[in-house]
Image (tube, rainbow, N blue to C red):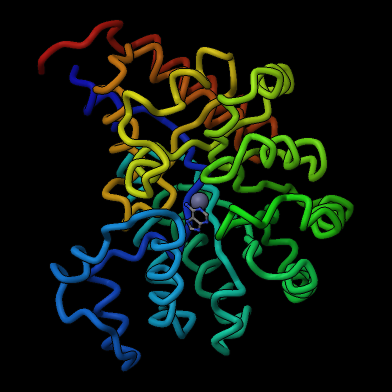
Length: 343
Ligand code: ADE
Ligand code: ZN
């Protein structure tokens, strides 16, 4: 079996992807036309050519601007359904997705409009493909904590449909500590909490996310490799990291996979998972992330199974379902080859 075939068949969870970051150029242009939104790009090729980023901010500028094509519940439905179909085809058995409400409400799109579309697509994926999914709302960290708290209150009518809350956007200069009250509130009200940390920001931000915000998972976390004591803490607590290798290359967090933090994080015994972040912008969905890492690091089938196991254990699925899925993965691994063959 080839690594590509093995990865496609590997049952796994995706835990770090942004719905707004999964709009493929074709759908983007279709939505722009459908909603009569003026955009700078006239065709797919010129749009793809614009996906040439210098850093996180240069990406965020394009990403937030691109959100303008999302206006109606049907638009949010179409984008979410397209991602979930692709994830299902990639062997994903459970997906936890991010949505950033502030990027929509600031344009006059009601939170309910966005959520109606996203939630109906999640139900369709469950019904049609048996793919379960969860939704995490992200606060934009360049905005104030007050605005994050407002977003939280606005979301309460949908609380039963939400897994949790998180933090995304421009990291440097906006440390986790800025959102301590917001995270305390989310946790008090029974939600799971995650935060992007250590993507462009320092190891100290990862530490703050763990010690001050008490996050259930760290999104990215690459910078942790610069702090041995932090690595020991993350290994001891088994706080999962949702690492996004192809995103890190596109946003120039890492020059290449050879110098990427991933091998060090794994060697330090952390619960590392692989994810796509913003797949349509970064040149790859989850299986592309698994495959390019397998090729760069020469991973064996057993090492890929370990990453898939981490993704299931790090998910926010109820314990019984998590264990059921891990047992299914073990059954898959028992029948799978121990070594690669050409075909
Ligand atoms: N929002 C979408 N993608 C992001 C990323 N890679 N980092 C921070 N915020 C984001
Ligand atoms: Zn992200």
